[in-house]
Picture 1 (cartoon, each protein chain N blue to C red):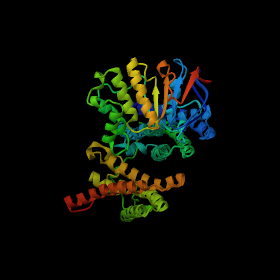
Picture 2: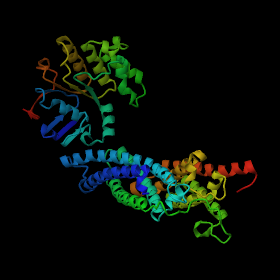
Picture 3: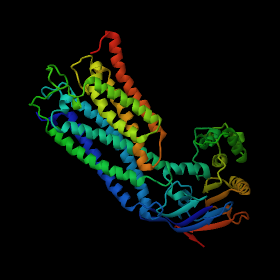
Picture 4: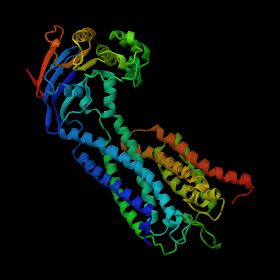
Length: 216
Length: 321
């Protein structure tokens, strides 16, 4: 499903990722562990085709995403990737529904209202659907971000430090939602250094990254 | 007085030089892409070329946009110079001030034409995920760069050879003896030229509808020349309502409601789309129906605008000029 071969990413002279090789199967839940600056977020942004590698190859569902021209990268992300950001990246002045509807605006799908309601229900935020995002709590914003990530039924969910701005209870709620996605057959990649993700029995693999290298 | 003291000429040459500097940067990368492009490679060099290709495309887009406006500014500059060159009443007098003028004008049109073709090829290239036309489009760009280099040299030669003391001939023919030629190529009569004009128009329509791209290409190129002479020597006289006023430029002015822009731009696009179907097929081996459609639309607008001036004049005055 996701095949990463000899991947390198440099920012000037700084080597953020060094010769990464990784194979992720469909339906796996992967936890990327590592300290800040170890290269976790860089790897996620490359898988989501939000940036291009310096060398190497990333193949997702037989699409060479590292070689996609920018206009095709947008389409690829829209169809395949649900991305949950550390700081949520929501449009604060819009309502929950409007935020979740945003990916649907550029999508060709027909039943947009149905998809919106389904995402609101799955992320357990339907009761706040008309609320302005700036009025929400951290946990509610997180659920709104989750709903936006799954609204187009993306088969890959990527979460970058999803619990970094949440309290323990909201972090546990997030883990429950993720478990549900795993049961639905979605491929999930989460980068974190939060110990709350340690020793979860339904996690397929824990991968440690240190100084841009996968550590066994 | 030196022609280089005209602020329009200074601005025109300055912008042309700046655009040429952009073009030099782009052509260096274009050559690099032509030499080293290997889409299947995942090497740092290939990724760097892919990024640079996007940058160069953006620079070329900017250059094309700027060049289109610069062409209009060039026409306006020529017009403004008519006040300091003796004998010149409009841009036509200035363009004929030396032997470089008409070549420069023709070259500027050719460059915009090739750039327009490049835009279409670039769009087709970016629509695909594998950059199938990248080498072709940069090859075209390198040819265009040679034309841009020629253009900037001709710009300098042309403006530096305009004398502000030597009188020039302009567009209004006041005294014509019966033995004089009418200015048309091959000494064609006006009636014969109009016959060819309308035959070619209908040929373009028919070949566009039947998608015969080679005939459409040839008839479009021929139509460009016939249309130029038809507008200058026949339709233009109805726009100016003066049989002795034979000028391709004056119709761009306010007195004629800027109709020249509509006339020349519709002709340019009509000819461009009429001929690009063949050229695009040559490069891509594919047929593009939209070129035929736009060819019909723009050529029809052009012919209708030109013809309407004659019809309206006749309806108003009951006679032809």
